Length: 381
Image (cartoon, rainbow, N blue to C red; front, side):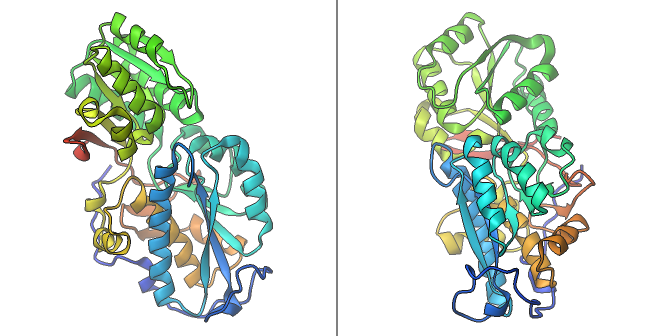
């Protein structure tokens, strides 16, 4: 796939005519004071804002907030607010939360769900209701194979990330003995299985842990017995950090390679800076400082922090929905049609979807932990 293109215009809504939106969607809950009360709509963010994986959700929500702030500054005639739906990343909570969003008729689009497990649980309801969802982070390939007409994502799936991780392990690390571990989640097991099948005979052992597990001594023993050069872990940063710490404590110096669910500073905190050093992280996400336009500077100014994993992708997903509203697509049906035919530059890539909701452009990057920081290493071609 071609390289990511930097953009000259940071906010796509700037190119749209700022005309008044026509009517409401039947809810009084968003019609608070201020201009635009005749067009009071919401976009939702659906993901973990509390719990073990909250950092990833908060990163995305910040990107959504930035897009909404910039939209609001340019489109006062059609007021849009954010409905934050804290799923805690728990699939069992997702259906009830989806119903709540669906029942609020002022919600015309969703950024998310953020994780693959909750997407599998919630997206059937969103599809039935005709409520468009654009995920900036859920990467399980099977999500696009359910026939959902409302499903879209702005990043590559694990059918690209998994082989890229395997390629890095085999060609950059030159690892001959690999142990693959997953956390049994929809995301972690799916990604681990792809890496395992791609690496083939170089996988000498596998293991499965559980979300919220804290003692990984059986897994560490298996890794040590296999004399592994590298360990791939499919899962999230809380468990990955503890696994890396316990591997180091046991004298295991195999390189740990992880997917995008671990690409967060919470991993370094959980592992400890010394143990985390040298860990490789793959992600179908663009290094934030390579995002187009003024996104990077705008984010730092707004949040007094650098954008983190999927902040830029969250911004792009929200901007698509906001562009539709600015173009007068203020019903769920009209906004869904708008997204299906969308083809405009975002800050991470050209944003265009195929008939399954997959993006037309995909890239996967490797990152590494150096000096306690997660830094870009290379794009994996």
